[in-house]
Length: 213
Image 1 (cartoon, one colour):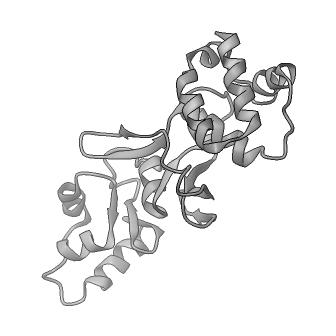
Image 2 (cartoon, rainbow, N blue to C red; image 1 turned 45 degrees about the horizontal axis):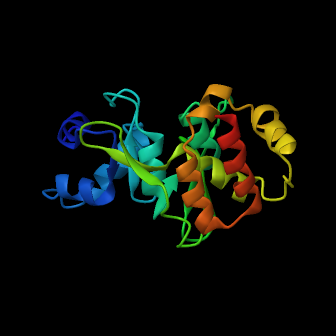
């Protein structure tokens, strides 16, 4: 079987080992065929059991967001990568950042680095939504409000924010969040998140956004 046939059947760029086995069920040694494709670059192993097609085989770019969900789960895109995804911060983020209700984890792969930070099972599922990457593929990502709260709660947990002036400097100068993006945040969502997170800095954030609007 040619790898182009596999790509046509898959109809997506991200595939797993069970799918390959089902395609190669007529082969006596399907692992040998998979190894051949890996050696030639027709397939790229992202992690054990998870693959994408090589550049000369793929029909479109693979989704880093979908792969992030698949590499380690349950998980959802959040933190810096989500803030960039929504256009809240200007920096280009090279590491795909996620939250999980399992242990902290980091994966260095041929297509990029993926990190996962722990949130308790009560905090993890709040304000997570599905986004369609294509007609057949979708991924889990935190809402803009949750991504910002997660960033403050997890990434910048040692930063002491007690006044509106400190919050203003943090958001506009440290994170360089666009002013119009701040106005787009929903205070009711921030309140709902903080009701569970119970963090004084997130309370201050909610009050700040209310005044900002």
